[in-house]
Length: 245
Image (cartoon, rainbow, N blue to C red; front, side):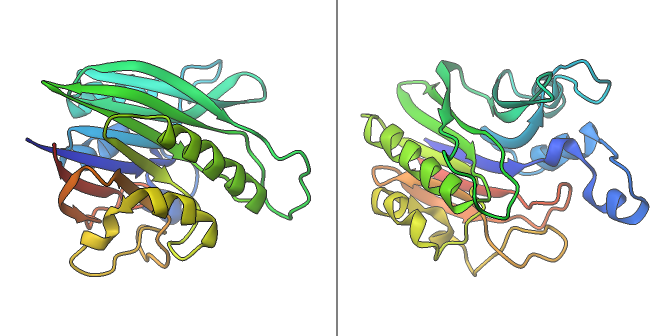
């Protein structure tokens, strides 16, 4: 059985090209849903997702995209509330039942001494039931500071080591493949980019210069295909991967 995975930073459904051309914050749910549907994924991890809050632009984006893109199952995992009120984080869309969903907080650095933007982060962890098969899905968006990256990798390693079924890890890591801080992940999992037909980058979507978006799979999963589709909707390109269970 082959399952298609997708990792996609949607930048709260902001139309990247329209924003560049006209400014503002144009949110377009149909654009993002159509981009997702175009690749026919079965399981999708989304980054930079807003949830319902006391502001007109803070809607239940997970539910809206799930309905528009044709996913029966979906969950939002909060990482932070801007101003203490506006929920923001990661989400998962699935065509298969989601079980044992939880949000794992990534510890904030004790000392914030780097000249970068800091933001509290989290990991969503869930079990997906696919007929007789079960897999764990981890989804995250890692911070910009080196200390945030180290804390995130340490958290992810604990979660990976704690699972006894096949596991996939997806998200925006804000690190390029050669970053040494990713070594513990590479030691445990396979970066599906090795299955690209040619090297492909993910950010920014219109003129990609770096690869910071990933799908990692545990070594007991067989990768059939992987790609970065030539689709521009958000400021990130999506990553897809087909795995055989």
